[in-house]
Image 1: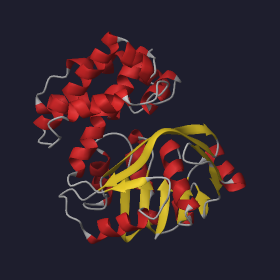
Image 2 (image 1 turned 45 degrees about the vertical axis):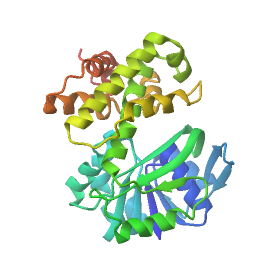
Image 3 (image 1 turned 120 degrees about the vertical axis):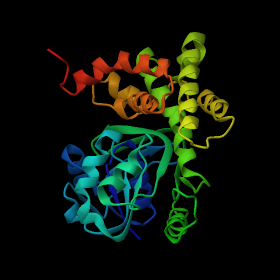
Image 4 (image 1 turned 90 degrees about the vertical axis):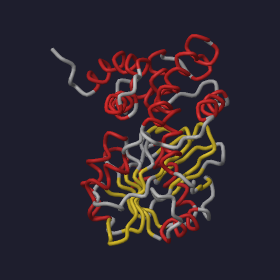
Length: 312
């Protein structure tokens, strides 16, 4: 199998690096100083599971230079998904799988809306990682996991083939849940509220846990997202909220979410695709989400400023 990683940030860099380390053919679609570092020095990954450095089979800002592959691991930020889908044509053959693994709940629909029904294989990932500098990724926490599956839960030929292929790669585990939509939303229960509360409080996980009022704010935001999922017919587990809180309580004291880091460092973030999506989808479903709406309103000025759209 030939793979392309579209977006070589903390997520794409880690999983793409592990694939290359295992001897798989991997092409990286990157740009700017990151691309220059990949070409010059390869990709360096620091990880509790073992540091390593690899040189990708190909690295370019033009997908045509990589050519058709069997799988595109789509790891750009959520707000970049539609532009990436429009640009990845040269990577696609008749049966190429596009596996979106960014935060949010809409990426697979966006990919299929541009590339045609069934092109995307809905997926998600779990890990805490980020870019230290050009060509340099740090895996900072959480046992890395890739999950994917067909929308209807069938164990199709492409799902089984991809699962068998990825299970041979060291450095992360692979899972094919019975209900990938529920799995994606159960991650969303965590990532959207944690990112928003972290950005609003400007504090890491440990502080939010220790300050009762902050933890209560987080729990309220999580419960709103769970209510929204159920209103949309998503079959999240009955104890999904409790599982999410228990997972949060086990994370590193100094951990934070990528949306929080982006907002606090003045970069464009996934606010509109996480908390903004909660607000937008809740309005469409007629579900009240006052906590998430307040968090969105509080964080929006920083987002507009980062994008150069702050009103004069």
